[in-house]
Image 1 (cartoon, rainbow, N blue to C red):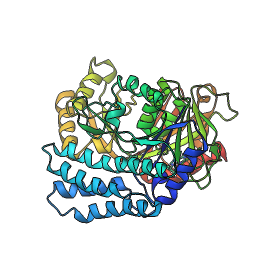
Image 2: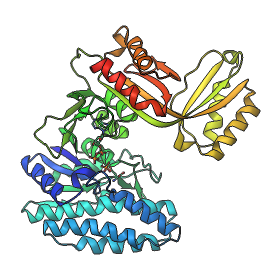
Image 3: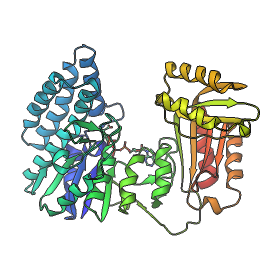
Image 4: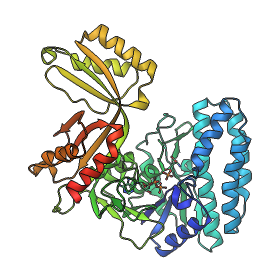
Length: 448
Ligand SMILES: Nc1ncnc2c1ncn2[C@@H]1O[C@H](COP(=O)(O)OP(=O)(O)O)[C@@H](O)[C@H]1O
Ligand SMILES: N[C@@H](CC(=O)OP(=O)(O)O)C(=O)O
């Protein structure tokens, strides 16, 4: 049995849905399908999820939202008209939105329910379309599938018991279509995963049904060794380990959500990234072990939007509890941290900028000054991280040297280097404005 997830680009319009139906029909093992909401049809287009977010925000701010709802309805109307299927989903969306807005739920819960409307409606549309083609197919709501999650709006975590519930899907003989991106708490609240979270649903479902393969259909032939929006037509990666993909997707390979690796990894389900527009292409396979490769580096990822808190204090290394006290200040503010490179008298804490509002920044700095009495403390914004990743890197001499030369050639100053903390990657901190030239220089060095 295979679980196939189709991303927003694969279900953006009727033409894409025809391709999806062909792919499902091509392989009888594709029994469980997970779908996203319609994504962009062209580069300036807006994803349905973003339209829904705009609509939800307009409502919550007492602004008119009807035009946004109309745009969403038109996206679905175009699809049902072109596929020549019932447009019942339009009334369901309208009614659903009215009910969500009228409910007593908190703003966060309303937003999650609104966001999920895109996936939920598309799953219904696809099942009706497959039925119209003569296939035995059924829409399945995540609650009925047993996808139970924690009560963290916008960043749900799966509850372990879900896997046993999902295993029962193996007994169904029809093709089951499950909307991605959301689940339910045990007391029935709809909660979404983080953005891009349909990949997570697909992985959870694949682990639950103990699939032979989790296929993730998107709009590229494979995972490339660098972001194709930075280097045109980069080299394709044929196979990756879970560890490599986890680091690459964490650091910006948006083709696969970094949280989506864990369920598949734990259940040892291979993941294959494939192209809906070219399903014959081999794609990229992600597995637990792979043959040693001639090139120890498999990929170079980059992500912006980090800040660094730099603290220096003479004899910091001798001060028992310094690190704990610093991290407690962050914990009290509800801020998680990404990395903590340190020296004898210095420590930096790298944090996602989105988690560090201006108010939090002020409170954190004041507390660090008052409670830790540092010699210096300051915050650097506009930081980007670049990760050079590969399983064979820790046993290859001279890679850091090659990488730092590439940065030097691109005339990029290194704010931070972290090598050795991870067995499969080296990490570099640079100014965000220098990301593209750095990635190009590293690509030339390692793959040129
Ligand atoms: N290293 C990479 N390899 C392939 N695609 C990448 C990479 N890094 C970023 N991407 C981007 O990821 C996109 C696919 O992800 P996404 O837009 O989330 O797809 P979907 O609509 O299927 O969910 C590609 O079109 C590409 O622009
Ligand atoms: N539609 C949701 C979830 C998702 O996974 O979408 P996509 O497959 O388009 O990345 C989002 O945009 O966040």
